[in-house]
Image (cartoon, rainbow, N blue to C red; front, side):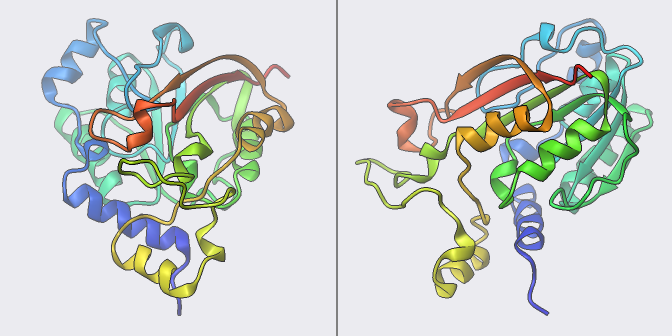
Length: 255
């Protein structure tokens, strides 16, 4: 039976984690201890740390890390007194969460799952959803925004990072050359190109417009309260020298 593209992406992230991808390296014990004293920072996008005021107090808050495995954010939230759940489709990303939890001696709910399907949580289960850049790995994102709204409590906060679709327009390396039409959807390309992406562990990624990203949150019922733009870290795609490639948003479920 042919693998789904989400299964391919899960195995791709397993491979990237095996090769020490920067988003797969768990925090150190020292970083965990520093967080307890108020010295901490997490990323929704590559370079800019999320403002602390976006969170408010984390003590006793129920937080869902949505497609956020790797042992980088949930341990810090736990050190700050939150009750955390991690949901991811990569075995190795989840293993990193388990390793840090065992090392530091805290409990975390670890769930393997595909976010293209209904999330396995009751309505109004969480105070905060932390969702870093990851929806580029799924074809349709409106169902995810809808599910986030459903499982957040009234007054709950959705913190999301995502890629601008300009990332998919150009070749990664200079000189910049337009190589794709938008929207970019690998499921609609020639089978041999799709298979090559899968076989080379490139990740099956999709472009999404600002209408889908921000407009999709608004359609789900959220109220947008803040946002910022960001770029790749040095050594990333060449477009980083010319334009912002990522955005982070803070949205609230008001009713």
